Image 1: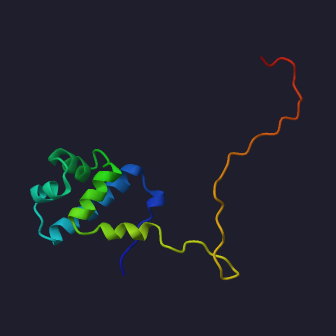
Image 2 (image 1 turned 60 degrees about the vertical axis):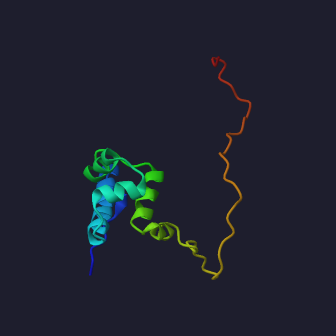
Image 3 (image 1 turned 180 degrees about the vertical axis):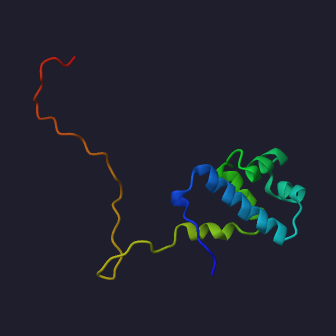
Length: 115
């Protein structure tokens, strides 16, 4: 049984390093050279190096390019499964079209020293 880590409890840098480690494992398993991956993904050597070392994060665009170059872009569909909401009635809840900030009601009261 594999041990699943919780990204909720990890720092952003640790999550980046973990994602980079997964990308590296896939690259090695597919026997893709680093230079080939850089070329296929259209990213620079320094960008890939910094990502692997956890020095900097990738832009989402470059992360998608890496996944495509590895043939793993479909994994992104797992981030947001079609049915995430649960309803005890057995049907999906209708989501609101927008979410607005609540405006504080102006009750007209003033202390008198506001400018």
